[in-house]
Image (cartoon, rainbow, N blue to C red; front, top):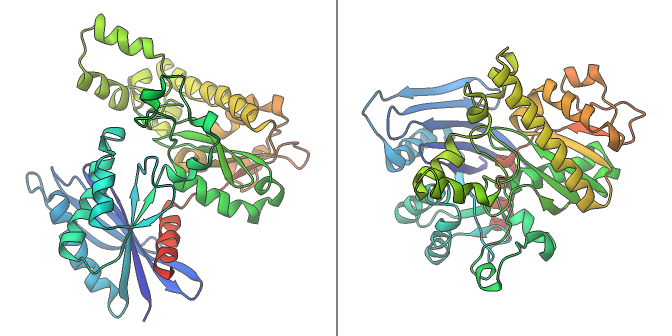
Length: 393
């Protein structure tokens, strides 16, 4: 019998989950999957560690489960699958830890109340992250739960990297650069010594490229600067998010186009980015396969913005010792990696086209002054590690 740690990543209409078993010092993936379409046409799928489908169910149109029903279904399924294994704890991805939570924490009702106060800082993520936590606190109060924050890794940044040039009374209300994707960056920082010890103790830029995309400058394993700021809509253009935007554009949308707050929020978060520019798709695979000039321009803009941000982050580090690609696009889109590396030749990057075509792990030549790596991220394992660490305290 082994202790099991359940990892939950809850969104507005989906719940992703993974189960890890403690095997001595290691944490081994046991199964994982997701429930999606929770409020429309719910679907459940689970796979074992080898990727084989071991559980599947569909409820059909109009049979909403909601988060309550999804957690109930998941609990029943896990009871069957775990057998003699004991569910020891649940680790949750929580997007925002604000100023007070710079490390994972065991959850209590009082801490949840604190985290609910941060909903205005992440209204599209925080309330949904907290729903399963509240359900389990009510129904399984004896089961330890741990919150792992996407912002926590970046709290080590120097104060000047976190500040906006705004009046102090606004800054003191929590308006500052937080940065996100912290669990992914923390995992890569922990894995990097196995690939490149010099980079792990030096200056590295990690590119987390997916439907949500960002970049982070890391020195000796600590975050120095990130492209995301007050919200996860900042920085690079993404699948449907616009990335960095002159604040004057928002004023223009309000004054000239008479758009209200919710319409602007929908525009910036759901109708922009690769989808908005191309008018075709938010999926990089679709855009790379398309001959449409607008698709090609969307890809060009994405790569151009990465190049601009890379120069900025290298400047924040005072130099560069390595690049790391991760995330869905970073790990699998060789044409994007190639174009980014070609644009970074001025930094001393020399691409190994053969290695890039097979996803690395090293995709730079032996003579490249800056080594370039492809390292798959594993946020779920990072959460499981933190959860076990909290339990062992």
